Length: 158
Image (cartoon, rainbow, N blue to C red; front, side):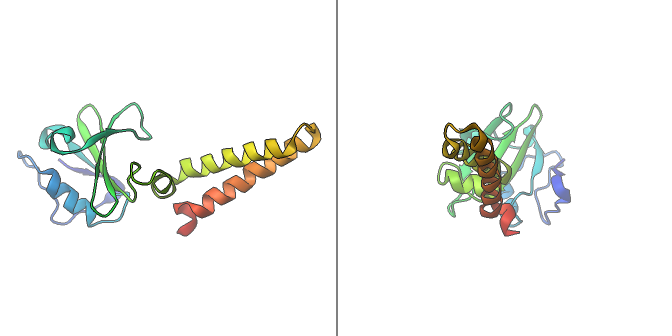
């Protein structure tokens, strides 16, 4: 059975009562809904992603196998393979096409943390050898980085 995350209802979605479904049909149905909708499909209901044009990739759950398929409009289908299921969703940006855009749109938490780290590093450099100012500039840099990361990522546009 398909298990929908975030209570996603996909009308006319693939039915899996003892039969296989196609990636094409699944991708079409997922593309019709908002980004971030994830569905969980038993592995025996779909062909292996590598057999139908997906490429190996990485994801936030680095301990899982990840696959991606670039769509014509620059989005991509991201598949995480668990022991028994594929967890499938559509990303706004394909990381192989736009790594920064992917972080900003599809991994805003990671994007914000990256900006904070850059701000912290810039603050440390700006503080120089003066220990008194170094702590203050690094804290201000991290805070500024957090603000920039939040405002320029997906979270800042909601």
